[in-house]
Length: 371
Ligand SMILES: [Mg+2]
Image (cartoon, rainbow, N blue to C red):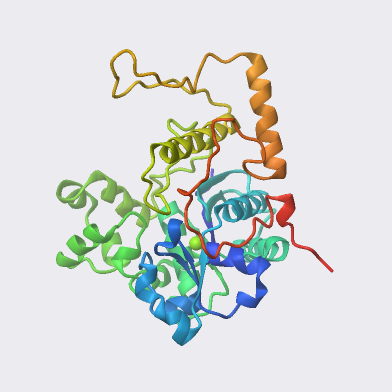
């Protein structure tokens, strides 16, 4: 078997790019997407980055840029991003025998043994980029390397045009001679290496390990004894030794959490109860999508007499069919078209999302109209 090769396909400014597909008027303008309750910036267009908007920066600190520089802030539209993501993953996955979906905008592909059908991986990378852009309108970068850690760095090189070269969105480190790879790694700060967080970065730079190349050249045994076995693996991966294979099987989720902060203070018990039931229904819907069953964990038990509603009574096949029908109706006609009777009341607790775009791809009522 020949050496392994990994590709990382990564959506550029993913959330903003999803919005721009349906709002081409946003192209070329500084755009950010805000977190739940319009709290802080969680995605930034390049133009917004150029205005020095930081990741996670609170909206109230940058609100003035809307006036002065035309900064456009959108509420997060997670239904849209999740749907666009699954389309992107499906297209990317069709280019390789194996795929690992790593995050909402990143997927690893197995590029080992593609020759002779695919003689040039850079050209292949461009084909993937072009197809994702043509079919769903999302710009991506493709990084190719002998390990996942190097594929990640390669993606960074393609995106940031490291080395003063325009990579056109695709970089294949396996096609470059080692000294050229090292020259590129020498220009990348150690904090950009996969798995090196801020704290670790500070510690490494204090030890004089400032670049990806310096980390590559560190002694793995020394790193293991002074830092961690995890960072030792990173060092080995930087040297082309695979420590992290592709994880293709998605593990069944052990827990599903549905939580939101409230849009306004919730003072009444009834409002809280309605919110709780709504979140429970959403979590249960996600659980059914994955064909999972819930066990019940009893916490904070109360004395007899304090009655709790039975959310997870023993299921019958009749109930399964009912819930399947409920999910199907809501998938087709929009969330909460049909819901359990206990979720009602005025929903003062809903997230405040003042600038949310329509669910263009997941709700019949929001389908864009073509004239
Ligand atoms: Mg991305």
